[in-house]
Length: 241
Image: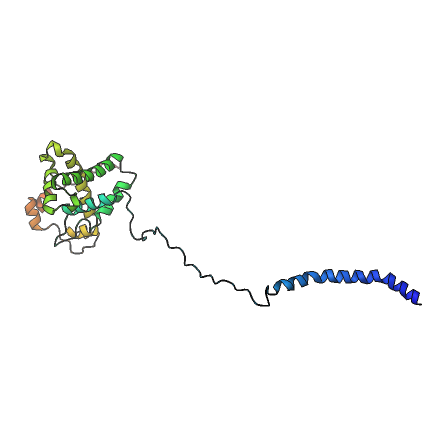
């Protein structure tokens, strides 16, 4: 019996060992995982350095507000000169605002930047603003925008009248004539300019009674005179139908 038991034990030992081996192999990953969760030293949690969150990086090149128009033609120097020159042409008075208050510089800047404006006009604008700055420095030692009003007006007196200009100011006169036209066009097409000339636009007037008599007398016309210029009606003879 003992030999059989020994034989059975000897025969069964490989099976038992195989089960144990499989059980150990099955439990090994779990044990390894549990071991990995244990503290590394003495059961104490390792200290983790505190990291202070960094604020988001500031934009070092902020964009201008959306409601602020970006210049497409004038640089900073030209903008100063053009603004002072425009207000010398149409200054602020008791009746209305100045050219810059009416947005004339934005109008000119836009006009110069559109594709329809030819390169010769752009060159004349850049060159003219530089010329008037150079002329002011030659006479008074400062640029046009920094000169005194009387000094600026002395320059304008030499270039504001094409019929009286001299050969040395011919280029400056051509520039100023063009610039003055743009200032006037921008001013009188703005709400400030409309109020200045009392333009009421497409407004219904139920009490229109014709041209005032005083205005007609000044022009040397009358309703009777206008009636004589109306072609008489042509009578059509009745013929066979």
